[in-house]
Image (cartoon, rainbow over all chains, first blue to last red):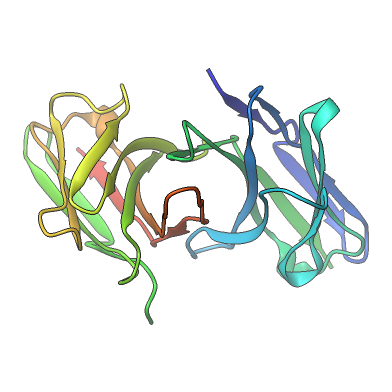
Length: 113
Length: 116
């Protein structure tokens, strides 16, 4: 079965620190990948997506992610985090013929001033 | 706001009662999805509709769960004879899909169900 793994469950950073959140997927076919963010008290919002083409994708709020097919990875990065980036981040893969999202367990990021 | 809306936002019910949730997708979206999220986990797929047709159901969706999308617009998710294990956040999402094309899913705020 397809699965998505996020290895960092809780991350605490100081403002201006660099961020990298890991995401690995297990699926041998064509896969579309996403990062969603959930700010406190808000609903899931799309940060960025990879469908095809350039493996380095840029999203909103300065986030980017790199699709590395050989490593089955889609890590999320941001060079300098802000306090307002405190949120839960979910990696997801569109599987089942594009019919459903399979999510990782999420990474809770806390950015301290 | 033209995003996905869900009603109610919170529901507390006693074990054994039936509950029904509603989801209104983004108007031009032909696909509608239901997910369930429990504490410390990511959302898990339950079922999805293309227009009014329910095309896939997860093994998580027991016989006590039923979902409908009668006119291809809003959808309802009903849970009969609720159990404490049904306590979770129920999320609805919608997307637009065309043959050969895949678009991202937009999520609603969810309905938090607590079964006492």
